Length: 341
Ligand SMILES: N[C@@H](CCC(=O)N[C@@H](CS)C(=O)NCC(=O)O)C(=O)O
Image (cartoon, rainbow, N blue to C red; front, side, top):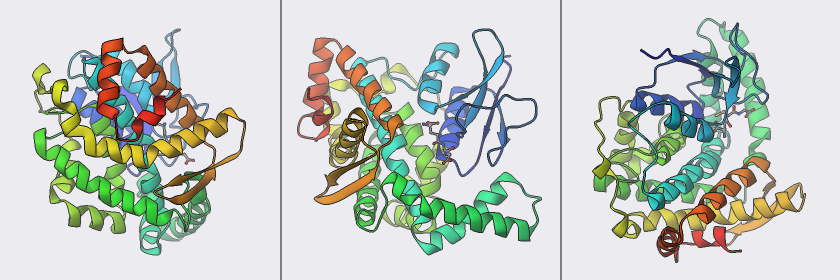
């Protein structure tokens, strides 16, 4: 039996939940160390303090701290056989990457916004974040830490682009997304067919918070779709699923299934990712764009320029016939702007 992988994470961290569910589905044995950020004894410190942090063997076979779920998923595809979350078909594989990034980088704006923008939500989340790290902390200390952390997070809402002007845009986009996800999973159960992909796990990670923890968005989610709310509980543990090659959507009619979701990605994520990448390239500290006719301003985010770079690389690496198929699928959704040179 393969030895378990150690990682540290938190129940309130969407990327931790993305990866725990993915490892359960893939049958990758693990030991999760719940933390509020401190590295457990005996493990190396990560360069950037992000959750989850994995402790994986380096080339020299020493344990090193590794972050970033997207490349870690690709590393696991090489090291663990079967139950892949990346379709073999290049067109589907590309769409999986794009939708995974939308989950990780756009839905997380909704997650951060709903957690810290409204009083009922931040009053709920503040103490949870402390008690997720420890059950034995005393109430007064927990309250002090919660107040301190809550203030810090509210002050950082602008970092993801959430402010009074963008709040209605973020919220309307979340509401539309739930309706779209409802219709999509009603077809075969998952975003890309009858088996889960990295894209499902990315969406699931953010929604373990949005759909369950934050009172405002959890109510919205449940009111719009009992199917989506129940899907979250199923996604948490897919260890018993027996995926087959033919469970992926047939690419020949992929546009029909994915057009609503891709149009949503074209409407919100695309303009923001493009404006951010251009501003990063120009060395700007902030960027402005417009989403749904409303102004969108936020500080530039280098990491999101990097993920857009990965997606573009995958697009330009596609064989010409597959690239044409992707173009055809993205046509009219707004996503095609990501690849215009
Ligand atoms: N791209 C990273 C993102 C990880 C990430 O942003 N984690 C959050 C918690 S969910 C974090 O640790 N944030 C640290 C902070 O906000 O200071 C991944 O996919 O793992």
